[in-house]
Length: 331
Ligand code: SF4
Image (cartoon, rainbow, N blue to C red; front, side, top):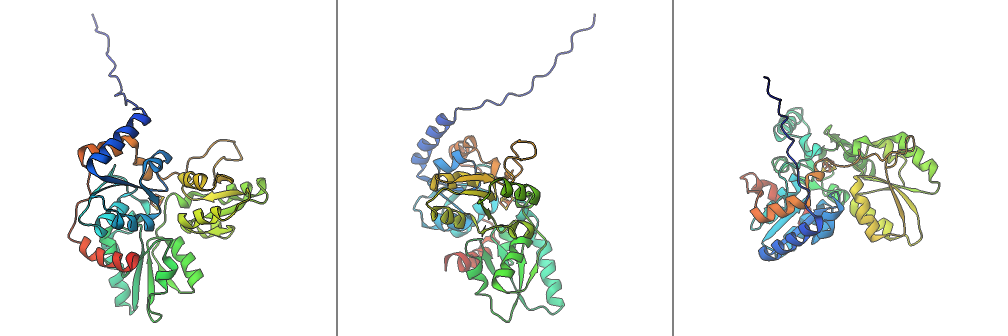
């Protein structure tokens, strides 16, 4: 007699109540005197429980100013690294150490070092300017670090007789070169989220919302920036929408979670993520969500506080990255 074949059941993930998780996080945070920092691209729930929200520049500065000995950084790996580098005495916990960044990964330190050596051998006299979305090992090879919030000011600090090698985002570099008038050697990197905006969807959305304002992050490709009314990082977007009292429709070309802080700050407006609702099918398109930022969850925030892990641990090359980060972001 043959026995029936038993099917192995799939492991069941138990969804925990978000409100219970928030309570637990609050208690753990108080017990450990911890502060939660959250980037504008993480889920709205995490932004709501955070003590500080912001872009990379603001959060890096916040990390140095707060008195709490423990930081939970809801963002991606290079952000946690920057917080640790600027505040080595603090414990920097991350909900998920696997939260990387496609842009940072597009510029590995060994390839950058080889390219710098090749340029020098060809007689180029340059300084390397890196977007903050780079690993600490890459930052250690650079002269300046910029964010979308301070890029113009930092580029003005590069001596006029030097060439500029800009890494890793080619779109941001091209945009900065056009607004500063400084020619740049561009590293061919880009962000997987900002690359996917469809020009057709954006043009269709503009046509369907006459009078709308297109707001784009400078990490977007040139064809998106060319038809944008406002180009800037997330803090600039916030300031812009807050400065307009009457209701407007904004078509927002950046990570879709950015709508959350915009809505909180200026709820009088309508915000449509690009491509947002696909006009062709009426379906919601989630392709402008960052899968790395999405690794941050309430459950993981609770767990990392509870276990005091995972943690960003100091590495020897952080010391060199510290010099360039301090010079660029804090002075
Ligand atoms: S949105 Fe792009 S640049 Fe930002 S963390 Fe995600 S992959 Fe990196």
